[in-house]
Length: 415
Image (tube, rainbow, N blue to C red; front, side):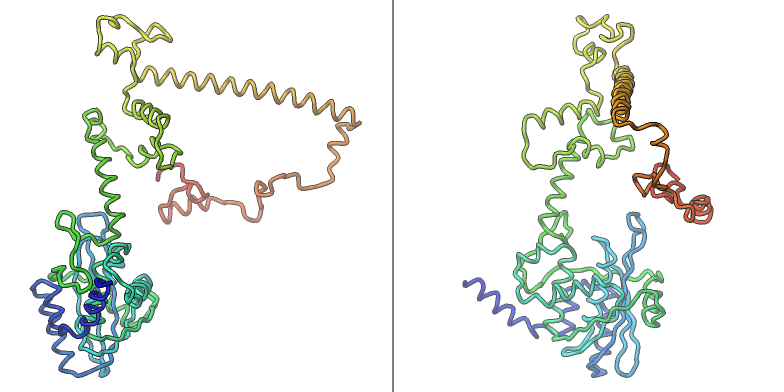
């Protein structure tokens, strides 16, 4: 109970603790971009305006490459229709929503206390996140911070700004590229590369938490438990891949996600058993070519197995590839056996069907006398002549470069 009272006192004392310029200097390291924010703050404070309109936008480009960029910015318009523009960039935990949130953060940072602002943005995720994180923060406790899905630090930073400066925020959703003048302006503005300095956080002085959790000096900005699970999963994955027996597979284009799915199989329970372990052990030995073939046994005991051949054919050396060919032969023979047995069953069925028709006095002429014109059992198999394909797939490939088979709802061949 005492800890809750201390938290509530700290929450009550937060409002008005810092001036707006203090917040900028507390949360960001000194560079030219931070100086630009301070200049805008002084300019707005001297104008003595109260109501503002802002257009914010964020952009994520080249995701997954070394050239990845996350830029953001805002255009601030006051009652006198004066425009103020700002843009910068952010790194790590890349997502378009992260850039959009940072645009809102910087727009609110430069406002004087007791301001009212209407923010126009094309990011519905930012709007929903603001109302779910900021407006319900009355029930916030430090443990909640580490359960948020993403951008934990930015959401808590936004709360500090809104609460400390007593800013009233209203959002307006703008449809992207719909012709809105200022929305198009901010979109073009942040995409121009001016090599501006990046705002870098100090990650300090967040009023509601006393500590931050980092990994390799990187602040963790997603659900903490989920991040720990990722570390554990990747650690185990790397331990498996880095085994000496897997050395050659590190140099091959292996789909490891699909590989582990095959090893796991259909079992998705968290309870292990001896049977499951044995099955996975056999799968791994097969995948990494460690079956106890005769050739492999020769490397262990050449005295016993020196002149041994494949136990099935007694002519060839039993290597892993030789066993693969044997498996294919067995599968082919088994398939032929199934087809032969299926034919026997169908022949017997036809004989019984004819006998049943004879007993009921049904002739071939009676069966060919159609009463129903539509003979399709599955109506979806019947082709609608008014909607037949006429090489549209080839036209789509020529014009758009799309996969031919994907046009028909499948994707079996590469482009």
